[in-house]
Amino acid sequence: MTANNQCRPTGCEECTNGEGLDFEFTMAFQPIVNSRTGEIFAHEALVRGLNNEGAATIFAQVNDSNRYRFDQACRTKAIKLAAELGMQSLLSINFMPNAVYRPELCIRTTLAAAEKYHFPIEQIIFEITESEKIDDLAHVRNIVDYYRQRGFKTAIDDFGAGYAGLNLLAEIQTDIMKLDMALLRNIHIRKSSQVIVRGIVQVCNELGMTVVAEGIECYEEFAVLQDMGIELFQGYYFARPAFQSLAQVPADVFSAPRGQ
Image 1 (cartoon, rainbow, N blue to C red):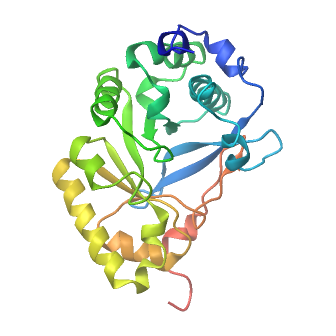
Image 2 (image 1 turned 135 degrees about the vertical axis):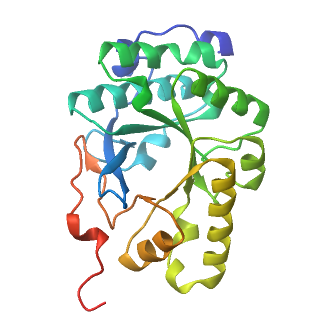
């Protein structure tokens, strides 16, 4: 299938129903919290099977022939479900750069879904997923620039893992930078990680990018990163992904556990 055929205008109803795919899926939502205000900054849409199977079981069925359709379906399903749940925060959606051939064509279905389900495009963040190698950085920069011009926010996901590294950051500046969980695991007892993350935070500050620390699993990790000036957090410590619903974040997660 050619790029032009894959990027032909597609109705949001087609994509929401997963037409052109031989498998079905839905979404869970995990909150990104603002530790300064205690509010939910955004919810990330995460792919799940219809019985809450993990994302890996779905991604195993994605290939070159259905990647574009899958990417479009993810967007429309996330927007539709977010609207039905009355989401008031930002909505963060992962996208596959290698599935976007011409951004001005591939964004049409997203715009149509936002209009149909009455979800403001200003509330949508597109995250560049690092699951696939990006061979053409100029192409990705063009996608990011176009999305930002249309009013969407953009993010680099899983920075510090896979293919999302300094070379990507040097070429592409997004609104948000999400630090990978592997870089942050046990950071409270890893001096080297603290030095690296502190440097990344400084770079992002100078580039005007907001940092999100993802994959946080304990208060100690959260406290060290908060001391570095990071305000936005995501991870099991705050809330696990909620299947087809919005998770609740306990108010006491921002305070030190008793005895500390």
